[in-house]
Length: 449
Image (cartoon, rainbow, N blue to C red):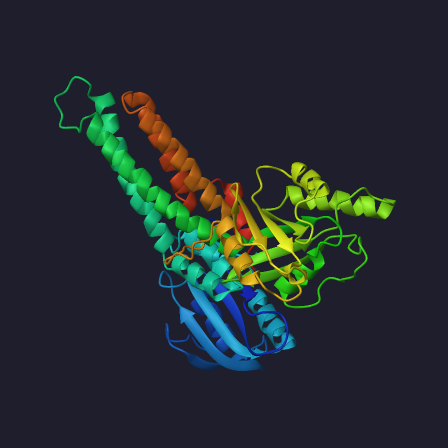
């Protein structure tokens, strides 16, 4: 899809974080920035060369001095003329320089507008543009590396390979519809089926990597549930490495949700401690229990805690019966430090039983392993930083390809499913995207990027 910027006017913004710093950057993008540079700097910097200059006000007086970088179109980040002014990082100084840019005809940029222009001018596809924001927001080294792979185009190239093969397959299938009576050289049904099967296999690999990347970006919400006084708050403290939740020997200490973000092997997890589940004794406790079930219904995984000294009791089973079946769970038997012979960490009738001590830390490493496995984390190499919409698009394409495989002997139905699969894949890179989707994506960027 040919994309052309619909906003040719010059935009300007402070590109560095708010507050004081050693260096502050004001960025401009638009057309005819050479004349702006001449008035602002007293000269036009040599293209793509660092130029030391004073930043001048309307009276020709220096507001600041620093480095100016001029990138004439189309060889710039946005594909337009770009001027970057790197001066001192004081709030007042940066505001003065920005105001001078506005006086010279620029307008204040919207969040993400520089990257949006790069997308509209074919400098980046949509997946790469999103990875810019993901790289900035990365909280772990793994997330940053994955975002960089996507920014460099690894994810987009993988999607384009799928699309190229899909286009070829569509051409072969639709040739039978367009020329049913011609003697054209097209593969028979078995050959088309083989090609479609190979395409599905490759899509599955990319989907697996995208799911890993989505987990790195989005993290997962893990909810701790169980009867009062089974050690949920102690486990939260152990996982977080600090005294996040109040721990007491008296049941029912936790009345509200307590959330703490942690990382396991570079994967961000949001652990939520909840009120103990039992017959509520007062209004406040009932409210806490209601919030517990609200958190459970939004969870990506549930850790069900039980007291190892008692085993699974009838109240425990009642709690289990009330949990959503579709949400994966682990069964945690806590307080093994009180047992003479702790239970083994193994599968019981398809259930993963983990015996640990939140007090001493025994069994916590095993819990880390099983929790990541439950979430589908495999630590594969070459992970792309993907968003939930990318995963959904890949899953949609997979479903359409599977339906196409079922209609391989009916070319007209097969061709339509292949078309829909291609449409889903194209939405990832922006070859086919609704305007409201683009607005939502770029609106989440910081100003100046």
